[in-house]
Image (cartoon, rainbow, N blue to C red; front, side, top):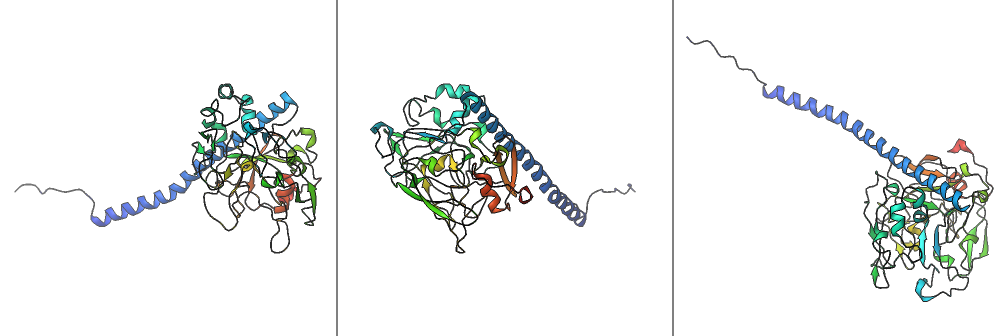
Length: 359
C-alpha cells in the first residue's frame, strides 16, 4: 500500500477569518497613515507661510514699508488713462501687481521675477505667459481644489478679455489680510460708505472714500497700501498678515488684481457669492459696511466660518488653518476661535487688547 498523502492548506472558514483580521488591521492602520500624511502636509503648509512672512520682512527691510495689497492707478474722481482699463464701479485699474509678486525677489523667486515686466500691466503681452506660472511657496498640499493656473473671469463667470488677451494667473492658496473692513466694490464710484468703527457696540459711521481704500481698511494690506511696521499699533505679534484660502472654495493668485474681474465660489452656501477683483488677493475678517446678523450683532467670519465667502480665510486642514502674524510667526487657528478675538487680531491699529486665553 502506498503511504497516505497529507495535504496542507486552509479551510474556507480559516481563510475568511484571516481576511477579516487583515481587514481590521488595515482599518486600524489607514487612519494612522492618513494622519501622518496630513501632519506632513501641515508642516509643509506652515513652512510656506513662514517663507511668505520672512520674504515680507525682507521686503520691508529693503523698502521701509510692506508691499501693497495690489497696485492700481490712483484716482479720486474715477478718471484714468484708457490703457489702465479702470473698472467704472470699483475703480480698480492697472498695473494690478499684488503683494505675492512683490515679495518674489525676497523668496528665491529671482528667476521668475526676471521674466515679469512690472512696468507693464498683468495682462500685457509681455507678461501673459509668466503670470500663469506656479510658485510652490504659495501652494498648500492639503488643498483639493487644484494647483494649476486658472482663467480670470468677469461678473458672469465668462473669461475676461483685455487687449485681446484671455488672462490665466498662477494660483495661490494664501491671501493677505485687509483687516476687519472690506473695500472692494464700494471703494470706487461710491464716494461714501458705511463702515464699522466698534466691533463691540456695532456702532457705524459714514466715511468719505473717494477711491482711497486706506480710509476704510484697518488691516495691513489694501489697494495701493504702503503700511509700515510702525503703523501696526496693535503689535506685530497680535496682527494677522496672511492666511490660507483653499482653491476648493475660490480662485486666488500670487500675481495681483485684474480690473473687471470677479471671484466666484466653487460651491453654494446661503451666504457665499461672487465678489469684486480685490478678492483675488485679499480677504477680510468682518464686519464690513453694515453687515449685521438677525440679532443686530456684527458679522465676523474667521477661518472656515460657514458663510464660506470668497472674501474670508478657508483651509482644508482638519480643525482649522494657519495664519502668519506680523512678526513672521505662524499659528494654527481653530475653527472655534472666539469671533471677537479673530476680528481684534485682523485689525492693526484699532487699539484692542488681545485676550490670548480665548485663542
